[in-house]
Length: 423
Image (cartoon, rainbow, N blue to C red):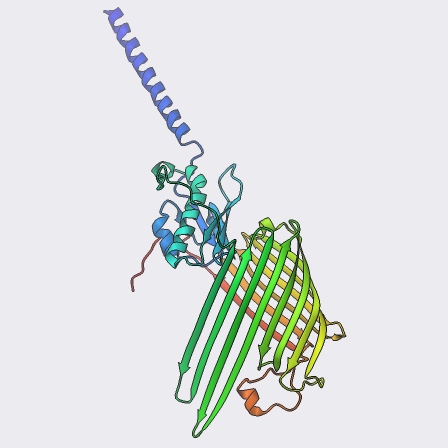
């Protein structure tokens, strides 16, 4: 009897030990399966361009969109540039904030100039999804994802031969009318473009005509102001190296507002970028120099007793653009003067800043300063009160200043996933 009891005790202890060991193995197995998997959905903050966030929220429910980069797992900055065909190239910079052993990277998406708004937002959403997959794979939602290929086997790859040889052509017409009992505004503008863009060459040709007409009616009298301008621009730029470029620029302009019958200029130019052009979606710092002749003819005799003249002008231009997770900076400095008289010059500084100071607090600022001493086209004689009030002619000025500032404060829930378009 004692032997049976001992055997029973041994069996119970053995079963208990096996059960405990099995539980530990199961626990270890689960721990292994969830190793390094981040809890919940990846938190994503997206900024840079105007997006249809309602569309993104509906079609990207595998992530949580948040209102602040400080609480995000992934901070995405999107920039855009016009491509050679007139469409857009979107650069999406994925900045990892919380995932281990992940580096930052950039993906691109392209839209055609003929794409609709729906097609553009689909392209952007699909590119965002693909770029987020590495982060999703390291989160708990990875096993709820599936990838589907919508192509068909045996379908040949599209022929990449370009019968247009990279040339693109575009025309636009815009007009508007604003009518009141005592004031009428009529405006229209026509634009034409013909461009060719390759890795080595950039050829641009454009022309536009703008007409702005304003009529003021006072009892039996009608006062009319009509400003007409025409511009033609052509340029050829060659990529000499990853940082150096050279080109030539030809322009024609006509404007009754600035007393110019015609102004024709031909200027060779050279440019150097401190950074390689292949990272221009994140940072650019260029130095450019232009020099060349100008031929001008005026409607009325100028303040320097000229009806027409030939001049030489030089220009130095510096441009800076930085796109970082803390904000964006754009700044430009332009200095030009006529070679026959260095006192006839213009210096322009313009900048736009958008900086996130701390979580929930950001500021934006824009400033434009101009020191103007090159208005050689101004008509001689006194200006009438009618010309001034109707804005018929350019007024003399030695400076121009423009500035703006904005502050944004946000607090509360960090999540931004709900779509509700009701009243």
